Every structure is written in structure tokens, then in C-alpha cells.
Length: 242
Image 1: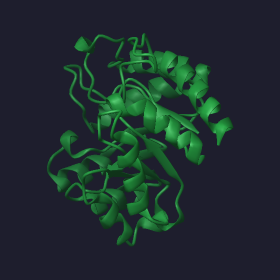
Image 2: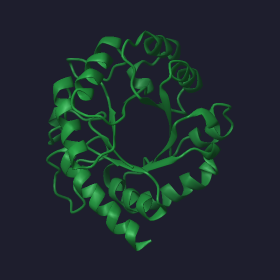
Image 3: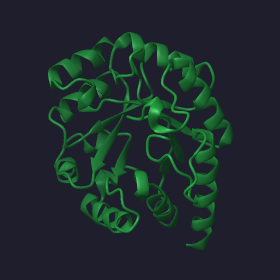
């Protein structure tokens, strides 16, 4: 599986066609799925460009994307969208349109309560386990581990020189990951080395403007679809070598 991560914390000034509005996100999702993405991860944004868990914005974003694609669509629940854990849970319980899945960063305060709220509503949980945090250890001890949809092994080392080693260490720290599927990805300079490692290991991965603005050869990406096309080509090439 190659998931497309459409926008993340990027802004229009990042030098790429970063989609922000529901209509732009839907257009980007449709092009990325046509290029071969089989899952979508999105950060719903307010009109002023802030990540949000607002029921109104989440509904508008999901409805726009689902009108264009038939693959699963997930959202973030990162603490920056709503710093107070209780308020974050309340936001999730207020949703009128539900995503197929939502990422929960396990190192953040209130992660388990957020995950419980999602599971109770029938939303799949992507357990985000970041390198450089205690997320993997907390997840290993969590009673919710067997109930998550999958693990997002998120390599936050931005250097291509260290990202692969960081990824190996993160995967070692995950251990059996409660038997859940693992999606391995990196960011910025580490995005392409980690994608190639995921291919060699036969793991799911993701690519998109959230994770990198550059193609493997260093040229600026023009769209999420272009990143997906290149990602699938890289994945297939390195998968065949393993």
C-alpha cells in the first residue's frame, strides 16, 4: 500500500501546489489516486489555513474528497489541532461525518483517550510512533495495541544520511507491534531513503507533499500525484531487488 499524504503542515508559500481547501484537497486526492495511491491522509484546514478537528471542516473535507475517490480517507488528530486532550476527544465525538481512519501520535498527552474515542465511533486508528519519542514504548505497553488499524512508523530524522539507521532503530523498538501492519515513512531529506527501505522490507509506505516537496532527483515536485508516481516507481524498483 502507498498512502498519499496531501498537505500536512505545509502552506501555500512552500513552493509547491499544496492543497488546503476542501475542493483543492479533493482535486489533489483524485489525481493521486489516479496515479496509484490506495489510501489518503489529510489535514483538514480552516479558511485561514489552520489544522482543525472542527466537525464542520472535517465533514466538508471528507465529503469533497469522497465525491472524487473511492479509497479510504483518514485525518490527523495531532495535539496541535487541539492542545487540550479532553477538548480533542470532545471534537471527535462531535464529528457528523466520520473518516475511515485517523492518526494518533502515541507520545502525545491523551493519546489513548483519543484512540478510545475513535474506536468507539468505528474509526480505524493509525498509531503514530515517532522516532526520537517514547511512542513505541508506550504503544508496546498499551492495551489498545491489538485494536488499532495499523502502526505508522514515522521517521522524523530529516537527513538522508541518518534516516535509514533511524528507521531500523525505530522498527527494532516496535518489536511485534501487537501484530498490526506497519506503514513506514520518513520526512524531508529522509522521505525517499525511508520509502526505499520500506520497499526492501515489504512494508506499506506513504508519500506526498506533507512528507517532502522534492522528487528523488531533488527537483521540486509539482503535485502529490507526481510524488505518488515517483514513489510507486521507486517502490517497485527496490522491491524487486530484495
